[in-house]
Image 1 (cartoon, rainbow over the protein chains, first blue to last red):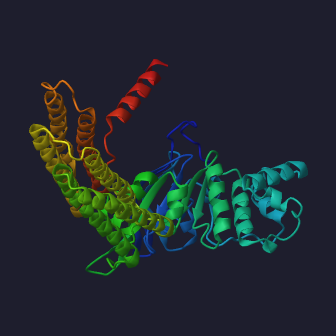
Image 2: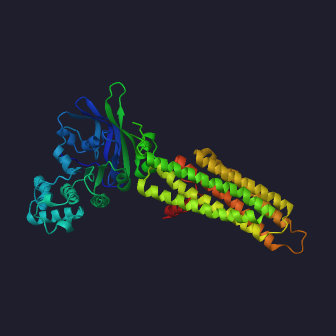
Length: 273
Length: 238
């Protein structure tokens, strides 16, 4: 089934509507009862300590958890009004619309050009030379990489710097013309200058795409995002099991200047171990 | 899970607050001693207080630098961010209050040897006591994070505003029966009233910052609210 979007592009459209979502790995419940609405053309940041389930939540948005045999999602997770985990929904189509950028830059061991062209070629919607050239160029331009690589499109992507590789992965993700870009700690392997370029890029991309980013860097969340969700870990007293929960979600301005929940306050001020 | 992670940073935040309160203590003292110098015509005491203001300026500059240091190195968030930006504001209010007492001392030199009307004199004593009380309360509110007390300061300040009006009226009244009014004396005394009245306003500002530090509420500003209302009206018309 292809995904028909229910809404036209207007302001304040929810790209994701999550209600009472639980994600299990086997018997272990990684996140519990998360409900959150994510708006289109905004940057939403997920922050929280290790093991709080923020990456698990992110991976649920493009069904990356399907690739883990024991993973199971309950509750409702809607993308533009369509239930993402409906049996009729094709996960490949989901991942074309909802792209992902990972923590470590992971370009294919191919040329710069072929990395960007890979997705469109597989999707089969663009194949001709000139058309593909245009798509590769526009994707690299959007990823703020074109000027640096236009003379070495045929050389291996593995010869690029870490920051360039990550921008190449962003170019690769947007080449298939997605609607959403998920980013899982995209700057944690990069130096401050490369990080700055990715942050700048995110601000440019949000006009066209909705972005959800998981980050360990609170200042980064504060700098780049419009809304922030704080996840935390709840430890069961009886079983010592740890479960991720959503503590607070709101405008980034408020989350970092005057959060409502004491647990958020303790985390962002570092009064939390 | 509740282990303190940023101990050195939070100790510095506490130290900045303590130093701010200590600086305010010196200003509290200056209000009382400055008024004594004015009313007793003690030039040495007035000079000592003017010099004391330099020391307060030095404390203020030092504190400001420490705040910038924390902002740039620690990137504080949430209540820490409010604590440090609040300290910067309050620092300015305290420093300005000290300047005003320095002005009182300078006025006392200009009117040295002149006789102050007994009613005006009494009112100045009252204004000084009220300004000192208001200032001390604002610093108590800051020190203890007492947003209730902070919110009450604006009302308490009404008393000082009334005294200010009374004193100006008394200055006029004291000239009723004179054919040659002493303009220098009158102008200086009117300015002195104004200085105390301004100290009260600074105390109210400190209270607003305390409210922000404690609750995260930005101070209500009637001017800003009027501007927003006008902007909304304009939008409605279009």
